[in-house]
View 1 (tube, one colour):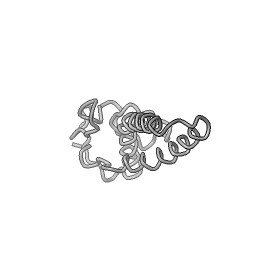
View 2 (tube, rainbow, N blue to C red; view 1 turned 90 degrees about the vertical axis):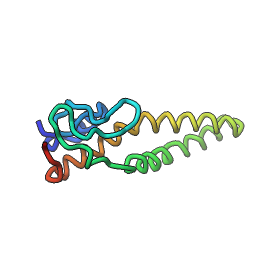
View 3 (cartoon, one colour; view 1 turned 30 degrees about the vertical axis):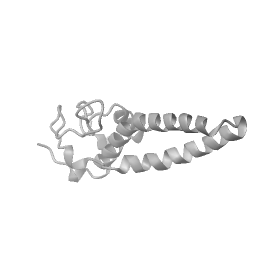
View 4 (spheres, helix red, strand yellow; view 1 turned 120 degrees about the vertical axis):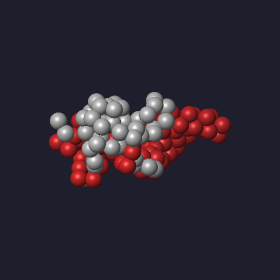
Length: 125
């Protein structure tokens, strides 16, 4: 089934698995560490390299994590009043961890949304 027919909940599941937006089988990324897009899907041959979302996922994460973590840090300060060094350690680890965890699936979701809403700009090989 083409991704353009999938509801957004299915797109989210497919993006979390980091699979091709067309076939849902091939890996979207070259390796497990860096979010570098494959040139073509290993399963269906869909051109993927032209549709890398660039910094879109990083900018989105900056806004979302800032919106969520700043109030959490303020709440921790209000409830426990830890020293500044505790805030530095805790929020650095939380921010880096959430960013690393969410970057690949978020990039995959943005690419899947591009495929869903602009299917004419994708090329088959």
